[in-house]
Image 1 (cartoon, rainbow, N blue to C red):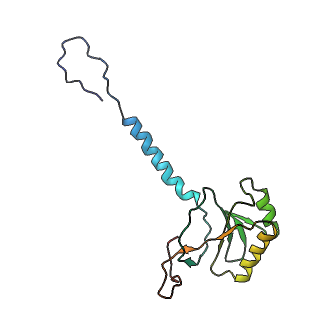
Image 2 (cartoon, rainbow, N blue to C red):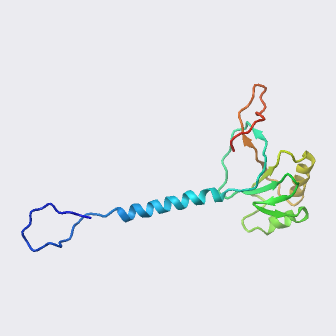
Image 3 (spheres, rainbow, N blue to C red):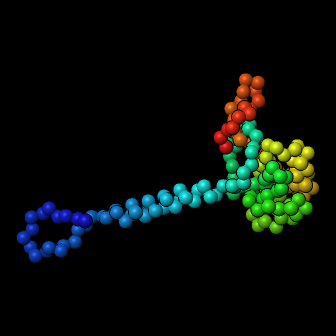
Length: 154
């Protein structure tokens, strides 16, 4: 709402005001902010995996990473979609945004045996996917130089 303080005796009771009304602009910005606040947590992988901790320096993550997860019950998932072991490389080959030069981020639950983890990595290697990065939680190193066993922030 605009108010004119000029003392005008003309019949211009409804004259135009030349001020910018920013209220609709602020409303749009607030709606966009709420949309982004709601959508941001939905863009992460939501499988419950108990990852081990690591004291390594975090590296820059690509725009659209491909996560391969090994759950506690030894099932494999690409993103959030469960995949059979025999169809793992075929499913990766059929993905439009996946190539053999792109990194795969391998997440494995803490309780997964080392042999199972190496078996999945061997399946990936035999399918031509040799660029694999292991995912862990960030944790502070202890006095012995190994990461702390307690819960850490992802």
